[in-house]
Amino acid sequence: MGNDAHASKKGSPSGAMRVPFLDLGAQYHSIREEIDSAIAEVIRTSRFIIGSDETKFERAFADSHRAPYAVGCSCGTSAIYIALQALRVPKGAEVLVPSMTYIATAEAVSVAGATPVFVDSEPDTGLIDFDAMKRAVTPRTWGVIPVHLYGQMVEMPKFAAFAKERRLRLIEDAAQAHVAECHGQRPGALSDAATFSFFPGKNLGAYGDAGAIVTRDQAMAHWMRQYRNHGRLDKYRHEFVGFGFRLDGIQAAILQAKLPHLERWTERRRTVAVRYRTALTAAGVRCLIERPYNRHVYHLFVIRHPDRERLRKVLGEAGIETGIHYPIPLHLQPAYASAGHGPGSFPESEALAREGLSLPIDPEMTDEQVDYVIQQVCAHV
Ligand SMILES: Cc1ncc(COP(=O)(O)O)c(C=O)c1O
Image (cartoon, rainbow, N blue to C red):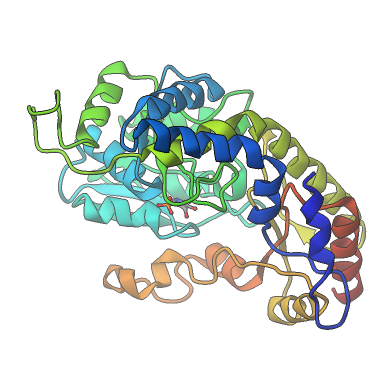
């Protein structure tokens, strides 16, 4: 626990305890020397782009997912795009994506020239609904991108068996699910590729944008490494037209310094989640569930409440910051109006968009803060 987490008690107008949604400053202070010396080393050696730091991080990140290859890149959005390009997604092909996710999942498909086809979500987990996904398959379907939403994996053995049977490509959007497990396996074990974001607020976060792709396919990893770096073979020769999607050296060094702490942070998130779930469920609050075969890594802890706006407001007044992930499902975003889905098209995603409320679950939270959140939620539901 960072000592500075206690500083969060100050600053609420009412004098009540303050619980920030995320306290990246507290995390930094708890590992300050490691981060500062990692950054200083990059500057000292001028290894700003694709230096040895990045190579080291790629190896370490692959190991953390028990995978043979990881390829660093500029962010979680480019990670999905690079994986789609590596798998040669045809122009105009249909790719199934959940309607309840961050827009990047669908955007990468659109920018690659394919068509995202939205699928409704499960009410109890928020994950893409497997049966609805099966029904959405057409002769034009090329692949599926399930999202391990909030830090919980979809049931990958089921998705992988279905993809194999129907000859579909399978890319896991694991932007929120570093070191999550499903039936003991981590993202990347059963798919063509798993993509990660290291956006600062993610469970493993950089100090800027960064991402990675994990795969078991050596040729694919080799191609992606070249593609993200202008199709380069060496300094002056470009084998094919790639693009500039590199991971920068400072971000790689920061991620490398943070990675050894990820398991501890993840366990702290899981401990807080158990506390929340036990107390809130007993008080009649509806919490999204963790499937028994999963190791949910609780990027977000989401509850559902029919009067979410009121609850959010009173918690805010009590000094507790909350989040909404996500208030507008993708099929109702103006960006995807051309898909022609009106309200009611994907009712479960829409209900979750109305009712879902993310409680703070920062590993730096003190037990006192966790209890305060529980007490305030129970007092106002
Ligand atoms: C599910 C999901 N996919 C993709 C992304 C995109 O990641 P990035 O912001 O690093 O591009 C995010 C991150 O916000 C995400 O939550």
